[in-house]
Image (cartoon, rainbow, N blue to C red):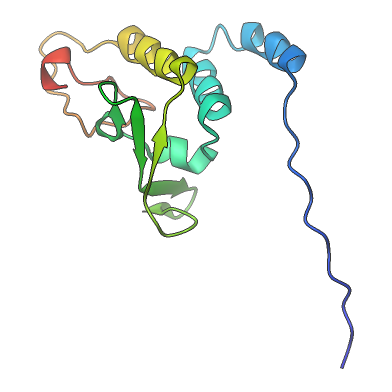
Length: 130
């Protein structure tokens, strides 16, 4: 048979604090991207997992995110890469980002938004439903 050498796994590349300090002002005019990027940095969630989150997955009370789904373009919502749901503990920084995002995106007056609305592209539920 043909011998194929094993390809070593690439080490992940991380942004430095200096790089992040330059990135945040560049995203200031795009608040959804800013919140997504800050949440990704603070939680380690994959972009597909972030895209599939709903406000119902976020618990401000226990400072946790329940991750059970991922979004893949052209496929849609599926189970996560591991196939196993998991809970992410939120750091104070991540909790603050999500609380600010929740407050900034606001619910329109008379909204019937529920706790299962997506974080991206929709308004969060009113405080009364949390």
